[in-house]
Image (cartoon, rainbow, N blue to C red):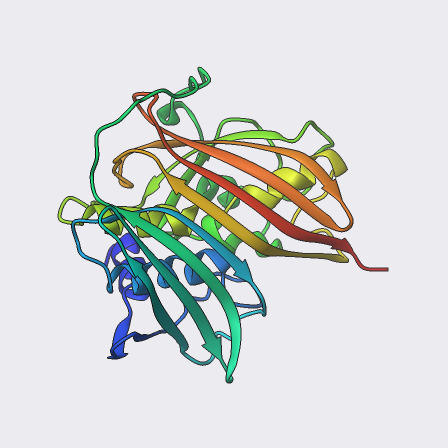
Length: 286
């Protein structure tokens, strides 16, 4: 099975009853459930309760507790409103009887309107860049990064960084990054909703890493405690997740043991297809 097909199997939940969905988790080498997985599973649950003619255009989520990979996650969908143009849903993800994640999502019918966007930066094409999997192959076997997330051989997302940054021991540098990414496999038969699940999943990678850059710290620095706190995602235009997308990231601020990062997602033609914002915990334990 192709890596992206395996991921879609994880993201597509079982319906237990009306308004209640259940899913399992994929181990990506982190100590708890990956936040992007919970985000995209919650989006899938909300989408299942909405008219297929309406696509998600924005979502806002809060990560409350670390997810337990050993048991399923239940997603309860609350139908807030079905309007003439917009639909609103609220989703609560639960484990052990406690909420671990909450999300509000808004869906809209297709409409014409005013159109403008910022320009995409001119960067090297993805074909000229090394993937994170290739980066990992050059590292010693003792480095844990080889089985972690996007560095793993079976990663569902192919990521190619534009800037040459050592993923294990980065030097101090300004908090700006650009990475190309796409689904690791063909999604020709997938719906536009499925492409949005994949982008939601991938959008949680690379954000807090960008906020760490001015401090010369990586995910594997001893004593670092890092976790997503909240996540916002806006979909602007149709796209394909199995075609190259450029993630332009910057971190305007870090303070109070929190880092804030923004991201703009462009397709190969330079169209802005999505925007992301996230604040996360960045704490150095004594």
